[in-house]
Structure formats: C-alpha cells, structure tokens
Image (cartoon, rainbow, N blue to C red; front, side, top):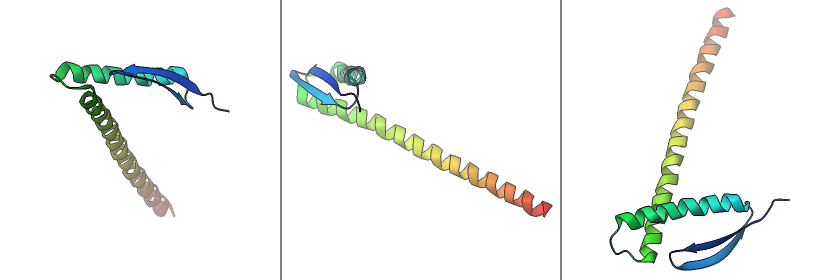
Length: 98
C-alpha cells in the first residue's frame, strides 16, 4: 500500500494542508521548488499581488515542464530514427549473406 504524505503549505498569504500518495519528503521538495520559483517572480516583478505572483510562478513551471517534454519527444524521435537505420543496415547485411 502506498504511503500517504502530508504537507503544510504556507505561501503568499495562504495556509492549508494537503494529503497525497507521495511521501512527505517529496511533497516538501515540490513545495520548496515552487517557493523558489515564487521568490524569483517576486524579485523580478514590481508591486505584483499574490494572485498574479502565483499565476506567473505557475506559468514558469508549466513552461519548464513543457520544454522538458519537447526535449524528450525530440529525443525519442531521434532514437527511433537511429533504431530504424540500424535495423535497415542489419537487414541489408542479412540479405547480402543470403
């Protein structure tokens, strides 16, 4: 059975607790990553309210995730092309031997 994690969130004037299937250490690492992103937004934005800061931080994190997915997708396509090339070469060698 998966261990449930609990996390107390205190950020941008909001406080609440969450429960998830991931362990508490993982949840805390996620929160710390988010808090660092929020701090980055706060340092760059002038007089931004907490809602806008939260939205901007979310967009930055979604951009990061999306960029990683694009990289992985491109790498998978490149790997498939390499596999196809190797397979064709192997077929050619087998044909030449036969």
